[in-house]
Length: 400
Image 1 (cartoon, rainbow, N blue to C red):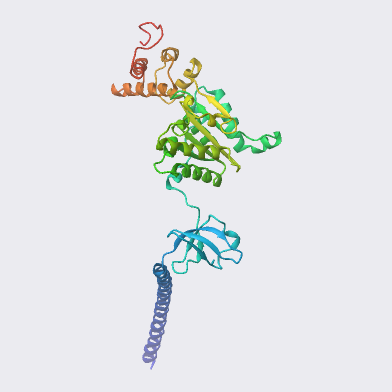
Image 2 (cartoon, rainbow, N blue to C red; image 1 turned 135 degrees about the vertical axis):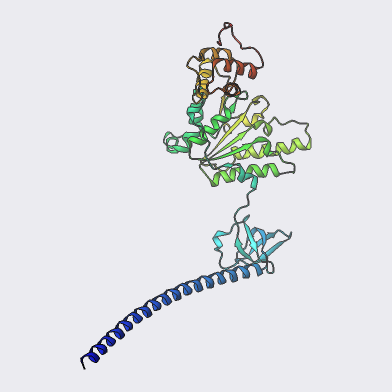
């Protein structure tokens, strides 16, 4: 019958459509399961690696601790004599994993706790105080931030900067570069500022040392610090060692001295030995600074240790003008500012005094809630910093 045939055909079409949709559903489900399987497999691999790492760490924690020691002598049969941190010396074997040519007398090594065999070579020990002396970031002071001192800067650049940046020039001329430079002068005249500028302009490692830091309580500690400072400088060459307040450790040696004075003298002798010892320093420059050159030991001042003595005098009129320009270039000042009068009234003042005057002038403007610094602010600042009336025969209305 025609109606039955049509109904049968419609049923077959519906079955085929259902089968296709169900097949696509199963395919999507299969892809989802495969993706989930890959995720679980990756998670399993991560957990296995983490488990292996934890097991390795656990095995390390279960190992016996190692003992530090120092090699005293290397024997011909491959063994070594070491002095352990526990006290006596031992004749021990060396692990095959350590190259024999790498071991040297005086080297730090790690010893097995049971057999005392050398299992590892250790780096040279350095005092944490020495590492703290290294300035990793260059100071933000350049030669343009220094007023006056043109002759002093020229000599510093010839003595310190040129040997580090252009050592081939000295080889062609046939001379050795100066070993060091000593900066002398009253406080506040720019000695430390010049050293900071040199650290900024060169790519050398800058190590800043305060002379009083080398004065230690126990015998030999100060000399050890000096030795490690120069050792670190040689490792990080090119390097600059800046010893500020050199008179704290470099004062004249006396016949009558206390035990503390004798320890300072030992530190000084180690410093003298490092300055012109048997070993070449290479590209290591030394800058010293002091405001009391009259009390320094004569052994420090002879050529070969500090080859150049650079004096930093009080700034003259031209230098004071340049210093004022440097410190007021970032200030919001009035156009009527009489810079000549400021230069005259600050005669005998140092660069540090002029910087303090500019800062105080800005503080007086802030006190009155003004954003512009006027002449009267500088007048009050000069009186405050100098602690007296401005010098010079200036008219009474000079600061109006």
